[in-house]
Length: 216
Picture (cartoon, rainbow, N blue to C red):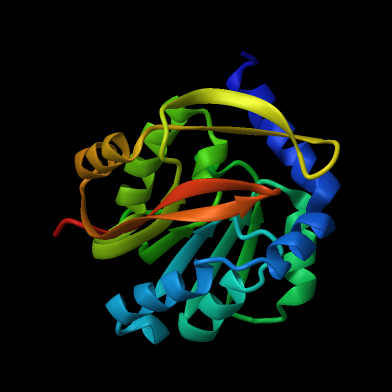
């Protein structure tokens, strides 16, 4: 397998290449994103005074858009410059800060956010880096803060495959039980967890959707 930086560069270049196509595709299919965000908001009653970090904001619709309407401050990150460009055009909110780049390179003060959201993004990291990513997220969250994310459900050391035409994409992950263990070891207790099938480029793929709370 290629090295970590090569794999993440592949993800970046592919999303740069298919940014608009990906946005059109995700906008046309049903997704648990909005219901799951509503569930998160039900658990963060003071969101209008709080801050949220979104890892993998894509083109900003609908996720970043909804977060910006509810939180005082949104930090939206994506590895793809093209996706960030689309998101900036789609959102003209003064309370959103966009940061392009690798999520594992982000630095924030401890206990900086009330919530972290990561849809279809952590799974693009080599799975060894996912372990440290959850610990980083935990450190950035305030005690009692929430992580909302979706993850894989099978033990997958990682592979690069053709996706959405001629783009190449990389994913890796663990099974659901292992992810629950990793979250617990990173300082989280699971609030909600369910496996929901998604239509991924014509193939039904199950994802683990988790709302987890940082221990106080």
